[in-house]
Image (cartoon, rainbow, N blue to C red; front, side, top):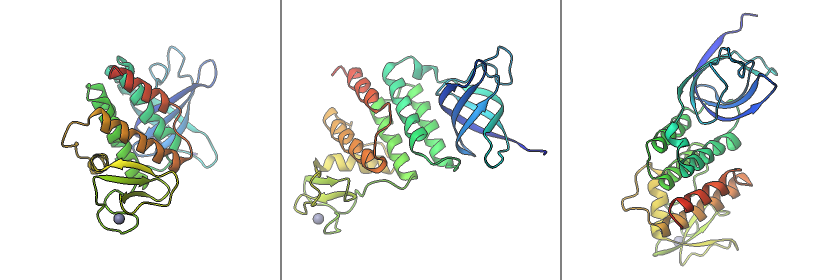
Length: 254
Ligand SMILES: [Zn+2]
């Protein structure tokens, strides 16, 4: 035998009770990608895990090297950060749950993507410190779509291939992104949008802060556009998407 023990930083995405004393944990590990693990005895008072796993925490995990067809077995974990600030606010917790669900539901298993891990960790850090919630969600969605190769086209019209012209623009999820006002896409579900919304999307794509404050109107339009795009790419939306939208509106007093 002699299987190796592997260590990795990991963020907990979901936890399930597996038995009276054990849990199944969905983790996003920096060096291992998304893994579904059994933590035997994690609910016992004394265990190698110093207490049960909770969602949305940063751990250093130790995993027994995986054999083909076998379940992933955790042999130890240290809690490095529990993101208490995220748990103190309904909107921040809803946003954090949503970004974790994106990773849990839509990333391939066991494919390390360290940049995506770093983006998720950064987003949780910033939410924990009280950064503006809607912008953090957009920023993470942009990083997520970029890393998975699903970012919509924002810099060229899908018909004339030039930089899109006009202050009103079309957006078609089916046809890959933006179109000039005068180059209307054939897609019957095309969305009429504004240049300022596409500019915001473009800024988030490059990880830049949007130059002006993202107004409620721009945020609403961007939300609608990204919801439609994510639903098209993944055929559905994450479980917590509606919860996240409601919590953000409630936080803004709307
Ligand atoms: Zn055009």
